[in-house]
Image 1: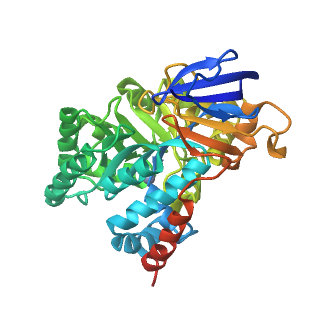
Image 2: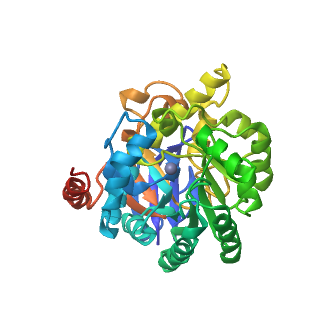
Length: 416
Ligand SMILES: [Zn+2]
């Protein structure tokens, strides 16, 4: 007994899809429901893999549009940090639920998160039905004096995530080289190896970060992470705006995934963007992230994939780089084994979308090109994760409760 999707389109062909135990068991023109299957009539819609948000701080959806158009440090010091100082574990749960609601509605089926109260992030993702790589943001203020607290937080975060469902992947989240001391980074490198967990870190986002790292340690951020044992196939490194060609080669050699966040980087004006075509050519595994909603201000990857492609073309002065299908593959997590994106194929996790094809926004033309350049997440009719239908005809059960919970919390958190 499973879930059967009938009358879907895949590569222009009418197909059926059968899902068993959260996995695609069969796909093709001859695939029909088996007795006892739940049947979902796609009505001619395109079946597509879900999108993978490879870097976000989901609960920051509570701070959407809170302090726009401010310089980064002013924004952090006068807006975000005071508000975050009031955050309770419950706030993080409901903030993450708000983000999950937006992600389900815009076709994201997996997200990689770095934030406080990781147990609540995991519980929210699980209750929403999404897949998530969950890391606690770990900081010691860049001082060895804070190392004790960091170690305690790191170990507690792994404990908090130990009982989570199979859709949740625990990771360690050293915030960045400027907020974590080298001693703590090295300790985290050992812990990650010992526990067999991945590492989610901000890397080379600003020029100032690179300069301060060189002044403090004698090396640039990627070399520092490498000597601390934090660069490997389990590494998710967000931003990479200031990586040079030698560093792209190092990241490729280590198999670390670099996550482009073009919208956040442009909004905060960090001066450069990850050179995605160069990174791809060097063999660096790649992903696409929105970053937190406070610096984006949305979590709709269909919007960000357009910016990913356009920025690459603009910076390369070449419209041929990063074609639509390739940008989409990055956004689907298909260019990183760590992110695990697959096609609509037998054996792949049943993380699927049904996308309308008749909306004027995507008529006429090639559907993949339209998904990259013309669509928004509003095109998603149905979202399926792990074989479970989370949204059907744009209805997500429980959405009203999430919105009601968020309203009062935002008023308390953002009050003067
Ligand atoms: Zn971030």
